[in-house]
Amino acid sequence: MGGVQLSQHIVGPTLVIICVLMVITAAAVYWSTSLGSAWTVPRAAVRAVVQLTVVAAILTAALRSLGTSLAVLSVMFVAAAVTAARRSQSDGSWLLAAALATGMIVVVPLLLASGLVPLTGVALVPIVGILLGSTMTAVSVAARRALDTLGTRAGEVEALLALGFTDRLARMEMIGPTAADALLPNLDQTRTVGLVTLPGAFVGVLLSTGSATQAGAVQILILLSILVSQTCAVAVTLELVARGAIRRAGREPGSRRWPLSFWRRRSASDTPH
Image 1 (cartoon, rainbow, N blue to C red):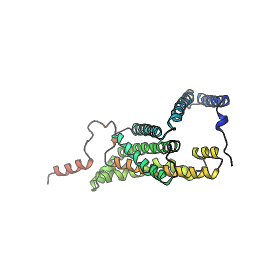
Image 2 (image 1 turned 30 degrees about the vertical axis):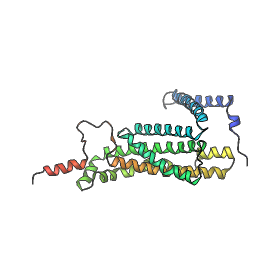
Image 3 (image 1 turned 45 degrees about the horizontal axis):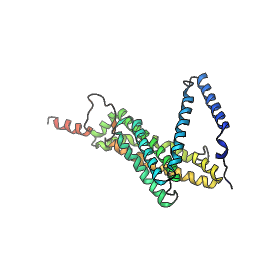
Image 4 (image 1 turned 180 degrees about the vertical axis):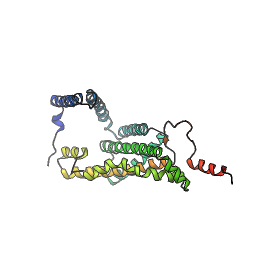
């Protein structure tokens, strides 16, 4: 079965007209309701066009060799680490790069060693890009939710410390369940793929090859790769938070710099017998 050669016909005046009409329609809905500024969608559309134009130009040159492709992936990794650190709103957030790296190290070598993903720029950049973007989102959500939980349930952490829990275990008891929030979107997509949605990788392979079987196989590989990468990265993130390596930024004046168990032990030693 031949592929649907959509790319040969889509670039042209018709594409521009249809896209402008869609942007105008969305802007009109914004303007006529209380969704927000009517310029929200046009600004986002212009930004997307500029960014994708620049990225397409860069990738056209970069994908010609493996070396330049690896350089592009390095830049993408740094951008993902910086974005995750900024979104987490925490001190020590640069350590989230270790969580991202863990997710990549667990999955990418396996894909390459198995031969499912060839060691070429054309294959590596899109696959690793998808994994990196999804893992970045999960890591930043996990860090923020964990730190928010420690802030709102500080009393419960203190209670666990009073019962003899270590700092790490007390924090982990509180933040462990928050990992579900970070992993839920991809889990839901994995559960409902083909029933509710047709993800981008499936559609792309289907259009390029015309084979639904090939498209399904590629999509399953990507979804499960994301699942493993996110799970490992979120586990490392929670461990970093539980050990106090990542803390809430902008600590209030007078807050304690030392672990809670330090103050508990000190209080016990100061108590007259």
